[in-house]
Image 1 (tube, chains in turn yellow, orange):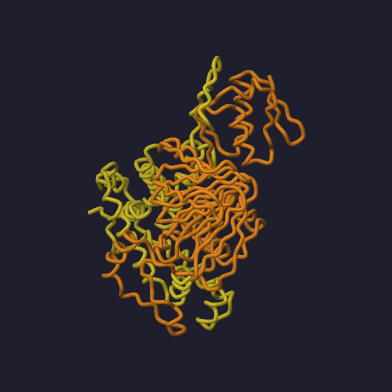
Image 2 (cartoon, rainbow over the protein chains, first blue to last red; image 1 turned 90 degrees about the horizontal axis):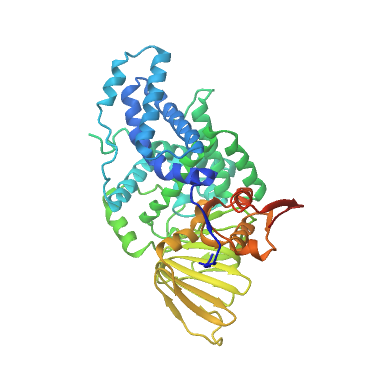
Length: 198
Length: 324
């Protein structure tokens, strides 16, 4: 792709096409902009919704809504949009379930989720992330944790892990699948973590 | 979190299935058919997609846990309790990683493995040492990452390397008669037959002829340097950050053109798609275009040629022919 200067030929400039045109563009945007908000979104939802068992499902639905919207057009900036979706969904649920007074939602708006303040520097984020990963790992049941560690840190194969744990290979697969899922849950849903929101 | 209820909620079900898919991909073997099956599952519902992206992200992030860098496993007894009281050491461990990279912690066995992508597909490989390689469309890479050394050969195509630096075990990439040695690095290698391009994005790397008796000298690159190796030898040019960013847009599934001729743009699209653009007419070929397209956007591109330039577009077999 050189800079061919071409006399008499106009350049058609078409930088209109957003990354939203391609599925992988949406995915990358989603991973980069939305998934890191999970902890904050969970806190937001938990304060507005009594049944804490539902909050994970609710957050999943928020993600699905955001993802579907982004496939049409990538919302910018991402963070206020994400919280608006969460709030609307919550209002929707509350109306449907008809259990919580609408004041509860109004109150959430005063929670002061900060939208555009610059975050801590990257090193601090990375360090905090490592700490959260470690904490999430610690919370896994023993077998799952052993499996995750042997795979992720030691790079062992399935037969090697099976041998060390003294279980069959399909069991190792099961441990790893469940361990991965739980790791993601614990990573973004740490009840002891205030996530920086006082 | 583990749900003993017989019926999981749809969200939890999607997340559990996402974990199973990742497990399957993690342990392999992972064939094109497996990938197609996964793609179909992901495409079936955005719920599946977000569940998968979420678990995958944390799993990728868990690379960082390598920073704990446990003692060599050969010395540790069989099933052991994971040492988890290392929390206070984490900050120090992280600082170490940031400064020096992670010591190689490698998979056993030193068999060479081959990684391939078909036309239009990208793939990221993560090696046991934490190094990552993103393969672009239509690429073949052979790699052997072991305790005795880390090497890869780019047989064809294009790959972006993000190497965990380890001075004792430099990562060496060979392609088209040259050898690229990482000195702590992110770099892009593209090979078209005998033509080789090495672009350094971050860190430092060295390019040498692969065989010691070959003529040509060793070239050390700094960020932004692009080495072009052809039969005539090596040529180093500097690329600006925006130009570099555009050339790396494939990692996001995009092609970004700035004053590219239609011929150049078509050649780029043709790398990613089995449906080929054919531009035989020189007048058409010389027109220039700027724009951002998905790598699969052949038809959009053809529409632009038609709508903006008023060219004629027709389909011939698997080709799209653009003519005046």
